[in-house]
Length: 372
Ligand code: NAD
Ligand code: IPM
Ligand code: MN
Image (cartoon, rainbow, N blue to C red; front, top):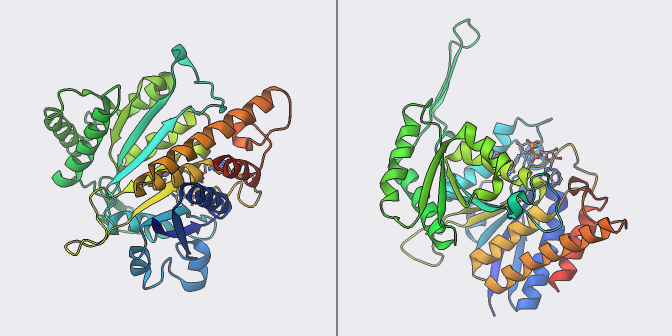
């Protein structure tokens, strides 16, 4: 029967809390739809590991991950004890680059049962997807400090856009827009102020748009685009942005739908193929959008939906479409039912970020049961 090997990296903080219910949901889906998931648990890519080994990863990390079909990642970061750039460049950001996961897909939907002050504008749903460039742009390692400690202290970090890097993410976004009913693409830019790299981004969007006459394209500078996200989130379809702009928009979007706790993300290398002797296997990575949330870690109240939904995206990517659909439906059903209970004045299992008093385990367990 069909079988997949999954690298499990829970990381830090609430990553450790949302991972177990998400794995149980995946197991329930595998059982119901007749495939097998082998989970390989790794303690590294965490600040706990860093404290013991003074490094985020063991020597063989790449081999271990390349032996898997996909990577399921919680969240990394313990800013009280390890600087964030050390823990993140030593794990997640390194994986994105080493495995050339150049697409970061971040769907944003107003889910049934989740309340938001921005819900039902003009009676329309919120349902768009951010396509974030994931390997270059503002997240570069080119730059440095000079004259340190003097009054001429200077810090420089260069943004890098390559033709290949920009074109492949923009083209992916156009293809995605073409496949959706609304066929609209919004490009995030800042070519009025960032006068070298962002005009280049605009130029490539315009050039590639010629290949997609059926897709309606618009561009907005990132500042006003943030305002539009808040004022009319229901009007967006596919939104494409550079690494930094995509990062910002993918927290803002889910916040507009009530909470970032439900948002998933897929870090994809869409062209990699396993078992092709002519290319190196570069696995994709699935994770919630949120981080390790030190402010609520250890309380058992983190929203597990972002992690579970990321698992759903992983099954979709692995080709288990039926199981993926069933998982999404289960999430929706449970959230809706919990909200109904809330409205009847009964205690409910929504986590506090969704205005309930449920726990990670209660909500995750209910979704697991609903999957069947
Ligand atoms: P964060 O996403 O961890 O938390 C932001 C706020 O949202 C907090 O108030 C938190 O309690 C809340 N929140 C986040 N996820 C939630 C959930 N599932 N349920 C309920 N509430 C939730 O962002 P931050 O505070 O900027 O970062 C904390 C640490 O996580 C830092 O070390 C940061 O670098 C790291 N981080 C890691 C990732 C990742 O591994 N992918 C992503 C973002 C941030
Ligand atoms: C994300 C995170 C990361 C990013 C951080 C933790 C480096 O915010 O995945 O959105 O900026 O890409
Ligand atoms: Mn982010």
